[in-house]
Image (tube, rainbow, N blue to C red; front, side, top):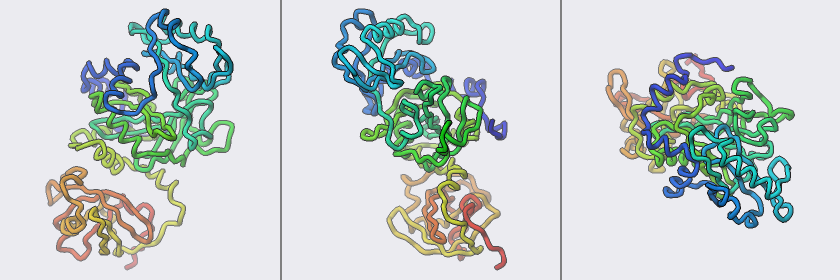
Length: 428
């Protein structure tokens, strides 16, 4: 199990009391139904798997044109739980005979019997409608193929106040029967929100893993394709459902990009163990932010929740040695690049940029502001995203805009947050 400050962790009682009640009953009721969720996604032009049919009665099962299904389809209950009752098929091997992802052969009679079991409520939440969905099977993305056992991995993104808070990759295993479901034995892998690089992995929600079972394939350092688009799609879907807190599950199609699988109004908490980080502190940090749109929400998440571990994986070179005063190249939103001096101030955590320089670089237009924060002696100041290069290392970070630095020789002060990959020489 991971070690973290208890105050940063979100427990079930706190999740239920402090956050679940913020979403309306109507929104929570809608996302309980996979079919209603599909309709919502379609109405908002949010990519998801195509529906081939919804079967509500035995007559529907018998009347459905099964012959048109050649392969790459999934049969699932509309209100299933923990992935039970979901069967993905990969091809048709003969007339009225199909093969599922585990290599099992199904006759048409077998499939109809499974559908009857779904209608009888064998796999569904008590008291809900027990219908069958037949939909497109999203194939495994080529870049994730070697990490998955006969099933499509998915990404779970926790979204709160239009900001992605935490994410994990769920990898199907032999134990999980090729399903990306943790309760059935899938692997949970934490993901750095800034880069889309995997960090830590767990089996059975608590056992640390470094390698894919039975292989020498590392589970950290996996680069997830189309990462920013995944995060943005998650925010768009959560907002469309009018959920304040949500868990958004997505597949990655090699041609169609991120596709939403389903939304969850009460996301599980094992994602904290996979990331070795607590949800509660992250939720509190974005609770009062004014998020303008999904892209803005993603930028805020990447600025606030970047992982040190992922940065170490990504960095291949030795840490360069720097002095307390260094020349850096700063890039502006107006495509202008300015060489300026920076003071490496290890007494502060976050970096700061002079207001005049920020204006010259076009960084403090209202549309580009990330948020405002209170700064000692200066009151409420804007926070902007800044990209700079020092010692051939390119760094994308956030800086508070300071009036005090206008009158100083060094127009930027770099804090500890942006100095982790440098060795500072103090003998000036």
